[in-house]
Image (cartoon, rainbow, N blue to C red; front, side, top):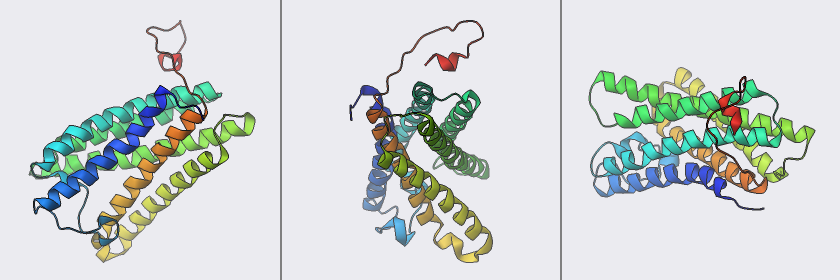
Length: 239
């Protein structure tokens, strides 16, 4: 494996939000704003609750909005990475990029009003966080499917275990999300475990980004940034 500067982007996309939500949880619990517990199975607190009140709210906003920007860069570079590996399905890559960036915008939309009172802000938070989860999961699925498709045609340099982890995490995230939807519609007491599902699905999403870090390092990914593009060429495909 040959680490490179670009592989720090998916690493940051994985670790920055993970550190943020856990740090804010500890701060919120220490200040008596949420109970001390293990949210992954106690389902005692939502991720949003860890960033609603000060002082943890300042940390949450101060780190989560940059997280969204990192995710935007991550998806833009993922588009370039797939092309460098030999992806020929431009529409497929563009769909992944559009979904990923839309999810990141949703994260900003959600974070900006976290802690604000009122139905309008509640709807904005719900729309933002739902957009982040759904769009990001779909983008990760497209990324994984394309990696597997390229590997069938040529060697990408990404090891079988890393590709396998990416595939398993993507599948687990989709299954967990579908199970969550079914339970929310069919089980009246679902709200008692909804918060735990949110924590678990978040970790699966961040785990996929972490796996991408190793995939980029193994494939010796490099990118060139340029302004302008020849006539008829998509500017995104300049990467």
